[in-house]
Length: 258
Image 1 (cartoon, helix red, strand yellow):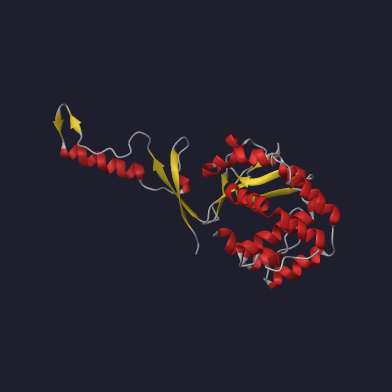
Image 2 (cartoon, rainbow, N blue to C red):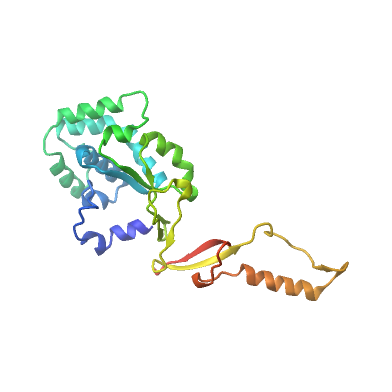
């Protein structure tokens, strides 16, 4: 997946400081090979530093909602860790333990009680704003197949804008949203042609699966049939970006550099 290759690269490990892109999660927790330990530690750090969180999100809406579900299932233990200042024993990844312990520092009864009071409520509507009150928006992809998660995001977000800044897949990033404040239904992306080799397969509505002979004046013409088939092959052949036509629909074919 694209994020795995990025996080394991020198570009991530040796990235310059950017005050607009600071994580609450230490690198060690992001790179932890155990998914459950990684998720737990990152949420714990996010809760401990709740006053510093300005945005929340993930690349895909589905992944972000998995994090919320994980919080829903584990908030009691997370609060216990904050209240005692000690990380749970089952977190055994050395890098994660050391980095999270430095963030926990000491017991924080007030913060633990505050988070517990919010999570104990019957409804989790608006839980993101209640736990991270300085959050300005939710940064996730909410187009394509991710659109189905919009109602859940709106429920947990309590009115926070859903910002889809870019579009990506497991293979690579595709493009940027140059109007990030657009409503999810109005989002469009500007393709980044240097991210991979893109081809575009024309989609002809109403002609899928059409098989048959060509008739001219009541007679079947093999020559016409052959000409028509060749024409259709040409129409449905993948084209490069320079040959894409405005107003036509295409399926995107991606070839990565690896």
